[in-house]
Length: 346
Image 1 (cartoon, rainbow, N blue to C red):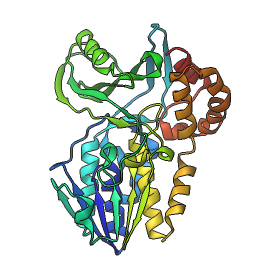
Image 2: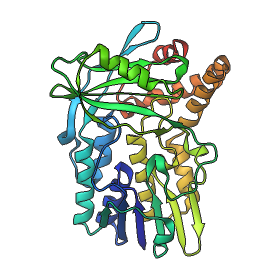
Image 3: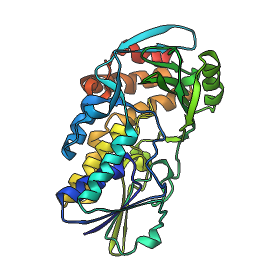
């Protein structure tokens, strides 16, 4: 089968490498950017990422920049709490994505960076994968999409203002400012907010904790779960178009975290292709993997609309019971008191 993967970020690059190395399919990849360029914070669980990239014979520890011990949360009312970490790290995402592409090329994938393509140009491909993230360049636009704007800097400090992961949640549960250490006196400082206050808060942080801005690496983030990111696939004459990663809502809505969900989604699509399953099976696999996205999204919407007490009983407690077992996947301890703080103090 002739496969086109549009978007060679974390999901597209990983999928291209797996398909090229482990199948006989003809794999082509296209990306509008001329070089690998990370546009989001580099924080994720080393346990989950390590297990995922092991399939490509990659040792994730080689890419780790900083491993945290605790994350400090400073709320709008100045209340502070500390959450123990379980393998939360920052890592060199640019280098990891380049490694995906290198291994894909070595295995015979034909990749073109700096090449923007439309669906009409891909008529010769039996399968087209939209891995273009928030831009969703191939699949139809989502009718009721929800995009959160971000502002982020890579910053060099003479003296680090914090020695570990630190976040500052905003009021109304709109978003948060984050400080992610990268080692060598550098950090990612950024913020995202449903109510567009991120510039005010991030610039205030920068003025208070002076540092040298090395690069602006912000981009918007899709926070609607995949149930809302329809259609996930299209059946055309002699061709199937299917989404992977953030293009179909594989971002955890409470944190705006998309690296691991996007890679998990790429894994599921790889399994679907290699095992010759149908698209309905792919959708069911997504539902099973990301079962906790939709109830958390409903809680967020309820908080914004003033129905938080209803959501607590209907969604938060059942979700907590299920995700408590996933601490290594998230990289931090999951405690009910921390969840209640997030929803009650914002």
